[in-house]
Length: 174
Figure 1: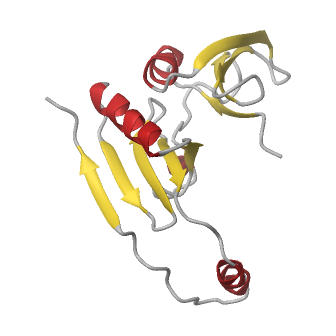
Figure 2: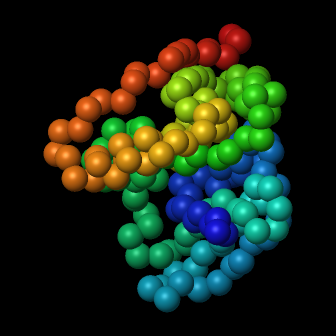
């Protein structure tokens, strides 16, 4: 079972649209507009990611209590480092990962690339200042991996994982 959609508040819907449709390639397919139970009203935009069962959605709020000044970066809102709360999208293969990296660089975004030893990821920031990721699973999971994960639930100080095989920052062309 997967998830249907992730819904986030929007600071600047036009900037989010330019990023998620123009840069990420997700198609805006639906908007719901209506009143909010707390007062005010909102537009709820849905962007198709793969098919009509997977979306990322954004709330553009109007006169909703508390929506005048809010932190859109999920981690900063909780007082945490940026990498803790992030949005990760899958890719089918290494060619798609490379295409996505080029897409971000061509759009002027800095890209951090990490080979985590079992998956390969690229990261950038969206207009809400959230870290977004494309991730390719490159390894398989063993019984030992599961045993280590289960044991970590019980240990206050587990052994550290092997460090990433590679970390590289790609800057867009000037």
